[in-house]
Length: 175
Image (cartoon, rainbow, N blue to C red; front, side):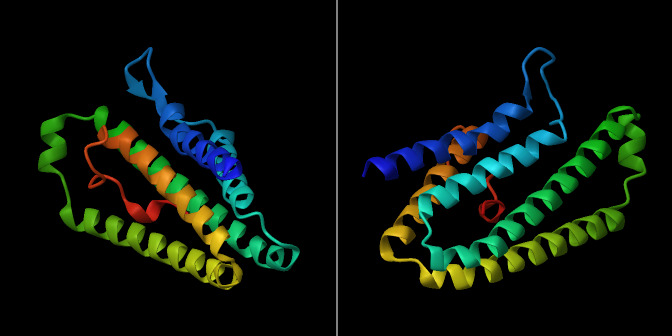
C-alpha cells in the first residue's frame, strides 16, 4: 500500500510539473521550456510508470519498445507545441485585422490534419508497444498502472481546467 501511495504521489508531482515549467509569473506570459526540460519531464514520467509497474525480468524485454514509443510521442508533441508557439509569436507581431482578413482556412485544415495524422501514428505505435507488455502484467501491476494514469489525469485536468471537469483535456495526450 505504501509503495502504491508513493508512486501515486510521484505521478501527481510529475504530471503537474509541465504546467509549472511553462509558467512565467514575472512577465505574465507563458515562457518556452528549454530544450532539456521536456526531455527531463519525459524521463521522470517514464521512471514513474516503470517504478509503479515493478517489472519482472521477463517483462523487462518489452519495456524498451514502450519507452521508445513514449519518447517518440513526447518529441513529436514538443515539436507541434513549438510550431504553435512560433505561429502565435508571429501573429502577435502582426496587425489583428490583417490576420483575420488574410486567414486561410484551407491551410489551417491541412495543418490540423497533419497534426492529427502524426498524433494518430504516435498513439498507434504506443498502443502496439504496450500490448505485449500489458498482456504479461499481473492484476496488481495493472491496478498500479491505472492508479498512475488516474492521478496524472486528475492533476493535469485540475491544473488546466480548475477542477471543473476534463472537457478541455485531451485524454490521449498521456502515456
